Length: 526
Ligand code: C2O
Ligand code: CU
Ligand code: CU
Image 1 (cartoon, protein in one colour):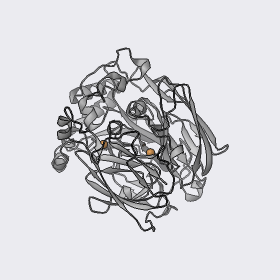
Image 2 (image 1 turned 135 degrees about the vertical axis):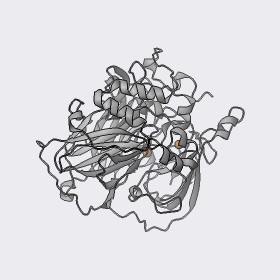
Image 3 (image 1 turned 30 degrees about the vertical axis):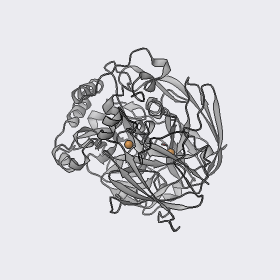
Image 4 (image 1 turned 180 degrees about the horizontal axis):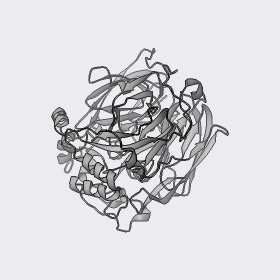
């Protein structure tokens, strides 16, 4: 199985020094390794939460937060003034908080990249590649034509650069950019080739929304990572990791372990990006206070939606407001990934698993600093998010099944049945799967096999019409470009951006190991 065996698939050239161990994932190892890194109280708490059975976290203890590092935010790269920006991909070493430096890559910095602030209109982007392997940079959620999209058909060779004029014409939203190299997306994103983008119209003050970057408007990139016993970042992809997608036992936020965010005593806005390779988060707040959902992948919803829990699968973004006017600290938790563990491969017994082993782990603590002036003290009643009800008549329908399976796995040794596929075809970079007439609206029916798969489409945004035949979950009320498929979903979308057959748009599972290994397809629009 040449697609995953062999370290060249999993490591960067510059770190082939044999230091990557090939420890097989185990729950015990994960818990003890995790507690190694974390400071006193939190370590106990973290190890405890990983094995909680049917228990719920209580309240965040203010004193326990004092010894933990402050969360930092990616630097803001403001492209709204000159309508241009530049990113340079390079290697680096990064301290996640395990006590040692890890080999990583980033844009302009050692790990991850700056948050690019954009506005409508034409913006000139330039990406330089200082790595010694091909990369590409895709603007996830930006609706631009195929030749601006930065998918696997636009590789940037080592030492080369790519300049592109992005025609930005869509509502304010939280987006991201990440490498999208042919069969190397997972390893490159894992080591840091990703960053957030914020598309703004400068009107958030009028909307009554927090918009002071890093103060009451927080960019938060959630990524789980695995560290070897030496404390170094590791991507020791085994067969189980490939099947379930690669998850780590330690959650990082903006590349930091165990950090605490500070907010004013008022309303804070969290821009949540799941930049993980495979982990699905089911987020909730320890003291039970609600989150107000104000934006989905494609921008604002018409009115804030009160949520007690929020599912965020790889590639998805959500913006929420949280009220801190009581001055109390909180911790955001996630339930365990539904795709991992006993329930993963047997989705049907999920209900039983839920009641028997509700386990959760902390992601981020947020404390109030009342020296920071609170600019926003109430949740706005309405936003100017546009309706997702699409008035255009839909034309054709398409049915896509995200395939994977044991039978597939066992037979693929001898025959040509791909492990990961869509409609039984694994991605082939030189084969177009279909073409869509420009200006058309279609209904897509997506089905998942074996696991829950986050499904993403380039070059458009969609309305989630239904989920398993019912109304979609509340967090799918707005425009989306990535949706978690656990069973089936019906999507409605229009295609207004062209993509030539040689620079097509991708559709794929956003579990990056699945994507790289064939759960992807491509289409032209014209
Ligand atoms: Cu975020 Cu095709 O990807
Ligand atoms: Cu994308
Ligand atoms: Cu998948």
